[in-house]
Image (cartoon, rainbow, N blue to C red):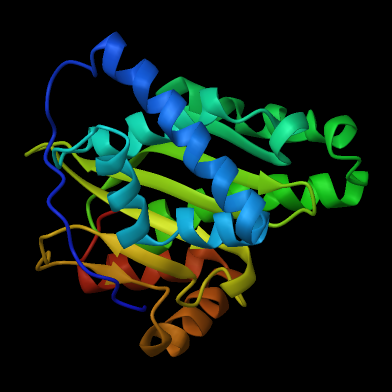
Length: 240
């Protein structure tokens, strides 16, 4: 996994004031339009999925304190600011229940961007896989609660999602860019933002975990009953 820096993301109660959020929407729209005009949509996707640039954007548009809200509020402002038909960029998903609407929002792009059904299916699958990887393959104690999927009219995409450690309220942000994802299960991230290094982490996306991934698949294909029998004999887990 490429290390792109760290940032402190504690949980802060409340929400951004309405006057501030409205300014964030206007500023994020203006900045995005300049980037698209000068460098194109692909460059915008590259920047928005870069941890340093995303953090700088959040501060620039007014959310200038480090917290878990950096991710959710900035993504929320971009979702309101960008019109897929006008900008050729769609921001979908969000926090909590809103994140579950992402597949439906992606499917609505078929008519807006004239993307073929197979292309839409690929986007939906990419959204689901990225969330699954960061929840299951990266077992670091941070439960994903925010999933933002950004797609261009050409079908390129990026992911900005965040997990929360419930016991102490600290967050960790995971960012992806489709152009750099060769395999979903092997170091797919642009960066993971968090200032803490957890002691007990199982990172199945690491290149060092390749053999472990292969063995895990073999064990599952061999049937769960063999695993249950082994664990029961070793006294590791007692099955009823």
